[in-house]
Image 1 (cartoon, rainbow, N blue to C red):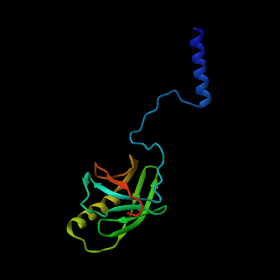
Image 2 (cartoon, rainbow, N blue to C red):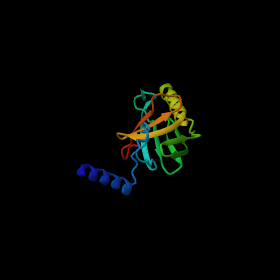
Image 3 (spheres, rainbow, N blue to C red):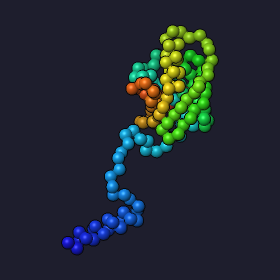
Image 4 (cartoon, rainbow, N blue to C red):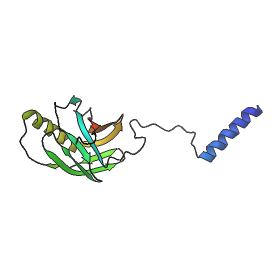
Length: 150
């Protein structure tokens, strides 16, 4: 009995000194464990809406400095504002060059830029950047660009 009382008192003292709360708090799914700083990073697009990008795709996304995004849509370069707060992300309006592209690259670029402007939240998981887009069940999926391959 004495041992149980000492354990209970020890537990209470620990909770009081550590400021812990014994009440169970709801867990929020997909909540970020720590803030991710995307500034200075460069990513290569792998998937749009769960579909692999076209072969030899140049689609990319970079965050060259705070508040800015830039990249390649598949054929044309683009840039614009980027608002990042916690796991929230807002991109655009995006402006870009207007070069002629072949049909697959042009179609992919249109879908990619539309998805970027619908971005709502992001996470970095297993070395991949995942951007969740309004109206799509599958996120945009990117891998980190290697040095010299932008």
